Image (tube, rainbow, N blue to C red; front, side, top):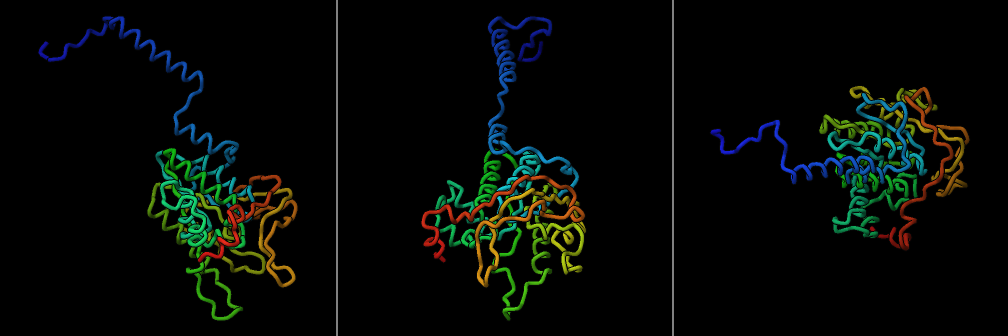
Length: 312
């Protein structure tokens, strides 16, 4: 042969030592499959997604999945985690979008990231993230922090998961000229729709999972006493395939701030029984969540939260 490498005839047997090695490899692979061993990435996903079953009837065609929620519960952020676990991929980007402002999201990511230089820095979190120091409309809850943490765990495991913030912060809101002035829908709903559309344009192969208050998730125009209301989803779905997921509950509670006797009362509030976050005629699928449980503000878990909250 003219080649410098002598090729062994296909019909001949490999040397005894090589046959032994090959047999060990084959047996090892079989043993691994038999024992159900999985890759470190799959193991991390199994840990993050434990007790997070997939959501039935979730669309494979929709680029955007919007979960309309009741703020201030454990169950709705967990529902978002279920969807994220169901569609997260190591090759196709998945964006988890939250109804908080960008500075609050970045502050929490720094707080959770051991390499950020601000890991566990409570004062920095309170100073930079207004959503985490507010008394609570549910968007700065323990459950929301846990959702962000789980998405970051999937990132570290090698999944193409990104976290986005699409809501206004106080700096984004128009300054009211009178006490009676309300922020018009075109400001809040259009702002959120435009922010999500921007991400979809920037990441054309990505899927987007948005967790947002139920009213913002209405698929058709109109709401109580507001027939002209155009939600974030109404504005977004003009150019994008959107699936809206509603959560239903039998009973339960949520941590909410409500006006009571002329004062703001922030605490666990009982919810109406047999209700849901988005009506059936304004959503695509409904997920039964059973009993809802209130999720306290994340600030309540910190050391001396009142003193920390005064940091500006």
